[in-house]
Image (cartoon, rainbow, N blue to C red):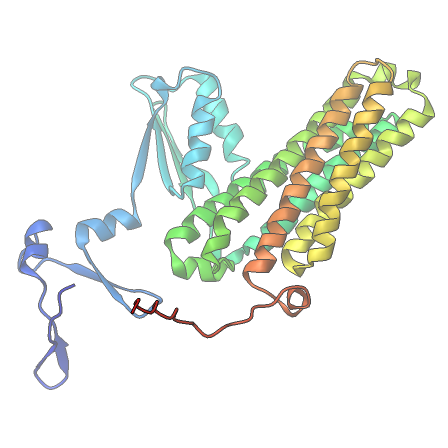
Length: 358
C-alpha cells in the first residue's frame, strides 16, 4: 500500500498526486479526465475516463445468426438481463429471422424494465430501465412465494372440482413467477458488487446473498412443479371421474401439507422461529413416508403418480428453505433464538509449560 501527502494549493484547494506507474498503465496524459467515485465506506475510487464511461454505457452485441437452436437466443437475453446488462443489441448479417424476432418479443414481455428501443431488419436494440431503488429483495421473495402458492392452490382446486379452466388459470400465472425470479436475481447479482445498491435493496448481509439466490431458485421451481401439476390435471381430465373420493381427499391433504411447509418456511426466514422451522422439516419427513405408503397402494391411473411426485418435490424445496431459515437465525441471533442458544465468552487460557525433569 502506497501513501501520499495531500498538499494545499492556493487558498482552499487540496491536491494529491497520482502514482506514475498507474498513470502509465492507463495511458493518462495532461488534460485527460479522471472520475472520482465516493464509496460507502468513505474511500474514494479514481477511474480513468475510458473505464468509467464503459461502466456507464456498455453495449453487448448478440449474433442472432449463431443462435441456431430453438430457445437459445431467448435464454441469452435472459442471461444478459440477470447479469445487469442494460443495453443489448441483437444483430444479423442479413435479415433477422422471424423465429428470432418472436423469441425476442416473447421474452421482453417477461422481463421488467426491458424494452425494444430500436428495430430494423438487421438489428434489434434492447434497453433496460429498471430502477433498483423501487424494489426490496424481501418483498420479491414474498411475492414469488405468493405466486407459487397460488399456482399450486388453483391447480389442486381444479383437481378437486375437475375444472379445466382453473388449471389453465394456474398455468397462465407461471409467467409471472418467471418475471419476478429474473428481476430478483438481476438485483441480487448487482448487490454483490455494489454495496450502495445492496443497502437500498435490503441485502446488507453479504453472507446471506448466495442463500437468497438459492431460495429464489427453489420458489421458482415450486412454481414450475405446480404448473406441471396443472398440466397433468388437464391431461387426465377424462380419467378424473375414475378416481375414488378417498384418493382425491388424500391428494388434497398432501397438497395442504405441502403448501403449509412452503409458506411457513419463507415466513421463518424473517421471523427466525427455530421451533417452527424445525417442525416444518419434520413435517416434510412425515409427509414423505405417508406419500411412499400411499403410492404403493394408489390406483394405476396415468398422471396420478406424477402429480404426487411434484407435490413431494415442492415439500422438499420448502423444507430446504426452512433449513436455510435455521442457519440464518443462528447467524444473527434474535431474542427468540437466544432463548435456545447463547454464547459464553471465556478468558483465553495459556497452557502451562511442562516442568523440566530434574
